[in-house]
Length: 339
Image 1 (cartoon, helix red, strand yellow):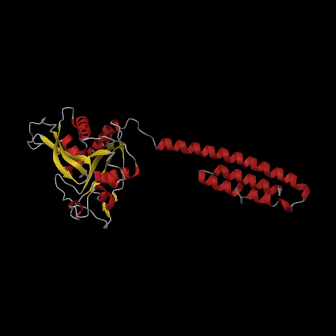
Image 2 (cartoon, rainbow, N blue to C red):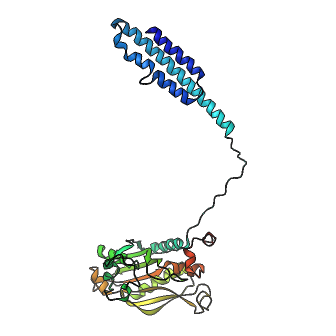
Image 3 (cartoon, rainbow, N blue to C red):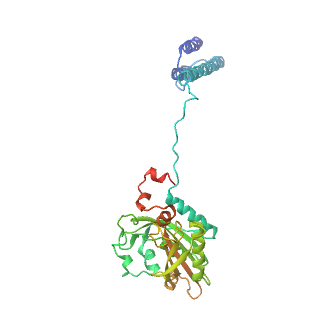
C-alpha cells in the first residue's frame, strides 16, 4: 500500500506539471483528493490492513495529502496569474478613447407640477392623502352628494367596471375616505390620476391628473378658501397673479365657485394664451356641503370646511404655455426635453 500511495503522489505531481487550465486543475484535484479520489479511497480502506500498521499508513497518507494540497495551491496561484496576464494583454482599455454619451432624461412636466403643488401645500401645513383609482360608486358619488339620477353618473361621463365599481372620475373619493376615518381638523390634498369618458382633443383626455384639497375644522369660511387659493396661485404662477371667483354649482359644495387667475403671460391685458380675456379658468371650489359632512359622520353644526380641485394638465399648460394637451402624452423627446 505504501508503494500505491507513493505512486498516487508521483502521478499527481507529474500531471500537475502538464496542467494548463484551472478546469484541468480542478478535475485533477477531484480525481486525487476528492470524496471519491484515489487518496481518499486508500484512507477508507485502512480497515483492511493489520492494526499495527494503521498509524504508520495513516501518517503517510496524511503527509502525502498535505504535500499535494500545497502543490495544487501553488499551481492554482500560477494559473490565475497567467490568466490575468493574458487578459491584460488581450483586453487593454484605451483610457484616451472618448466615452459613450449618456443621455439624461428630465422630470415630466406633469410630475413637475404635482411635486411643486405638493411642496407648496406641505409648506402650508397640509398632508398628502391617496386612495384607489378603481373606486366604489359609494365613495365616488353617494358620499359626495351626487344622487343616482345625477348626470355625472351617466355612462357617457364615467367608466363603469360594474354597477358598483368605477374608475374614479375625480380624487374627491379620497376626501370622503379621509373624513370617514379621521376626526377634524382635516387639512389634506389628494393628487392622482382620474378617468372620464371624454374624447381626446387639444384640451381633453380620458385619462388625466387632478389635485384636490380639503380643509375641515371649526369656523372655516369662504375667506379662508380665497386666501388659501391666493397664496397657492402666487407661489405656483407668480407673485403678480390675481384670482377671481365666479358663481357655479357642484353637488358636493355649497356655495360653489369657479376660480379664474389673471393671465401670467400678459398680466390680464389679453393674449393668445388667455384667448384675449385676460383670465384663465383654473379650478372649481366651494364650501363643503353639509350633507357631505353628515355622510362622513361629521356634525355640520360644529364643523365647516372648504374644498377645491384642479387639473394638473391645465396648470402645466398655463405655466409652460402649452396649447395642446396631447403633447404631454405623446412621449416626444423633442418636446419633453424642454422641461
